[in-house]
Image 1 (cartoon, rainbow, N blue to C red):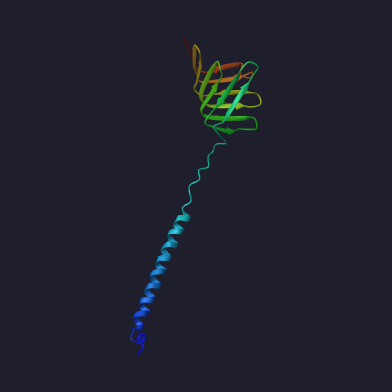
Image 2: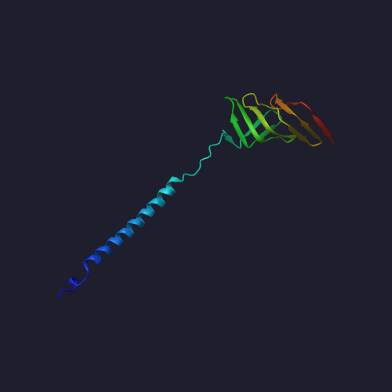
Amino acid sequence: MNFFLYINKRLIFFLGITIVFFFLILIFFKQINLINIQLKDPEINLSKVDISEPKFAINNDSKKIYITAKEGNFINKDEILLNKNVKFKSNDFSIETEKVIFNRSKQTASSETKSLFKSKNTKILSDGFNIYDKGNKIIFYGNAHIFLK
């Protein structure tokens, strides 16, 4: 007699259906996990800053004044608004403030925020300043406190 005639055909059928069903469920859950991973897009933070860490210089015949900041935004073709930790540095002095409008074509800069001017023997705290004549002249605005050593 044939051995296969003694095997319960219903048992083999249900066992086969169970195995196929198990594999379908496994594939279905893997597919759901892949979809969840693909749907989680990383957040793209679009900054409202035109220039990150801008660096400029005001050039005149006798010296250069280097300008650095954390952020910069174009106002127009020539003017740039510099924000956050704006520093003017030359061999003779430095100025620190938070917001400055820098004009690239005229080589001027002006600020209406609290400013700290430092040189070898002088410190000036003011409510703003204006650098013009290619850095040769600086005017301090508002309440200005001068500290001389």
